Length: 218
Image (cartoon, rainbow, N blue to C red; front, side, top):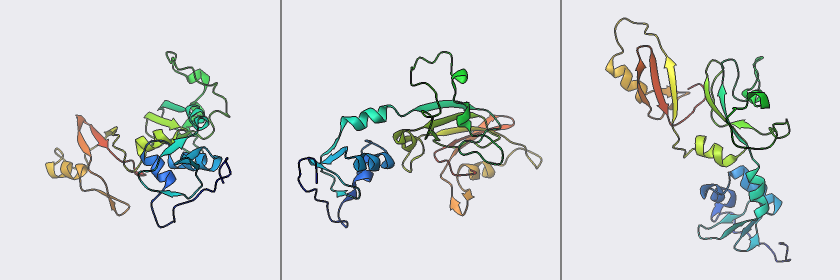
């Protein structure tokens, strides 16, 4: 029942779309955030407090409690230039996660955003939105905000990721045109085709790859 004592009626399970999925599609929150808000009683559907598992029709009115918005605004996103020798996520094989570099002494001197103090509690839940392996260096986005992660690495993301890859030909001569075409479209990873990529020469020993996916080990 909602705060007024009225029963909350859910649409039968076979009908409609899961509320958290609908909220994510509307850009209101990530699916995980939506489930957290629903469980906390922060979401109303057509004026009634929603429950986990609720399915809705596209024309319903979804209202978010301002407390959820305030909580969402406190979620941190960090842009980090990851050096070689750090992993993107959880520590592995003796390598530290890149999140350990998020501390006051490493903060950009011209940063004008005055966020919370960088204590261990504030950084909890900071996860990479995309990956760079141990031997790669470059921009890594660490975020607590599911909306940011969905924009960058969600299934329907259109964000492009650009990589410079140093290469060496194992055969004499230049790279054949058909091989370059295959790099752009035609490769398979873990028995699944990779999406088309933009591949071009950056210089005589580096290729520029522009991807719209970030499959593990790609």
